[in-house]
Image (cartoon, rainbow, N blue to C red):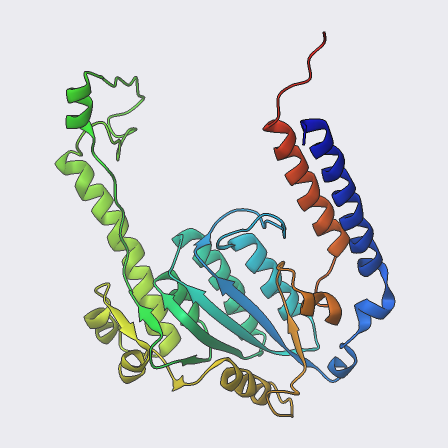
Length: 318
């Protein structure tokens, strides 16, 4: 199949996707399906899957994304806080950690929710470590499974020095800089003793913030937190024994607890739930959870079409 034929079928596919997206996104029947049982309130479910990093949200169902951004999570927590029908928030975390700055932005929104009086219940998945645990400690109550990997309370920065390799290759790097430390952490030279002290001071400052956050969130003595905040990873059961987790239980146990904390009645199968997030699933489409579906499809299709054109030979005039 030649390039022109491939483009033709790609355009046809995009048009079909947009037609389906617009039909679903604008149909009141689809939008309102499954939402009637929320009239007396619901549990807002917010998922934190993958590494946490700063930046804008990325709505794309055709491009597989990895991780979550502070901007999308802040938006979700704000919506849950401002919605009077959201009686409790269940935060499902399955993350190895991430950026400290992004984590603190998200944590601030979680603090606002707790200050508003709405309970936050955390459900740990396979892993809730480092920055993931930083956010978990903001919850009123934490569930984990016995084998959940958690902990890793600590901070590190790394850099690579390839100076010897560059010498062997006969390549020399030169810089013109405004100050002695402007190229600190450069891979082309070793750090000086003074620079190492600077970086260590930064790490120690962030570490102290992490320890204080856990101590405040878990109502633990700061020295006790420091005694286990050496970067070690823990199982969920070990974390419970140390006071970092409240109870053993799965997602549905946490959901039932969140509903009860928010004054909602019903078993875990009948609890009214609203799942926040930009991910698109068939269940989300049918229940009306996915908002602005046509916009998500349109953006994803445009991004993929643009990438396909960029990878194709440019038109020529003969």
